[in-house]
Amino acid sequence: QVQLVESGGGSVQPGGSLTLSCAISGYTYSNGCLGWFRQSPGREREGVAAFYARGGATYYAASVKGRFGISQDNHKNTLDLSMITLKPEDTGVYYCAAARSCMPRPLDSVNYNNWGQGTQVTVSS
Image (cartoon, rainbow, N blue to C red):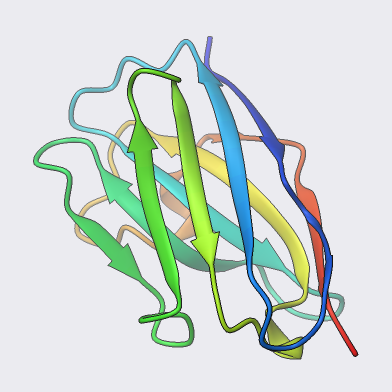
């Protein structure tokens, strides 16, 4: 059974940076995906970044491209999300998720069937 546990959230000023980490256990989908999603009050859950296990391709939402980086550390069994130049609109609860298959829409939450509990990110001056 896949288990995902996020950490690394917190409060930061605009322009700051944070790195989120997701501890992964029980994930064995060789053609699956790992992703980060976020949800703000009054908004739908949004796909932020995804990592395709087969080949290691990465995908990003347009709103974070160039500022966020997703990476998998196989040694530590973690999925990390590095975030720089943070903006107030990046505020939300960030969730780590796993999917058996996510193509051709890797940032669509309906493809993901395992979720972490979420970690809060607040960007405010």
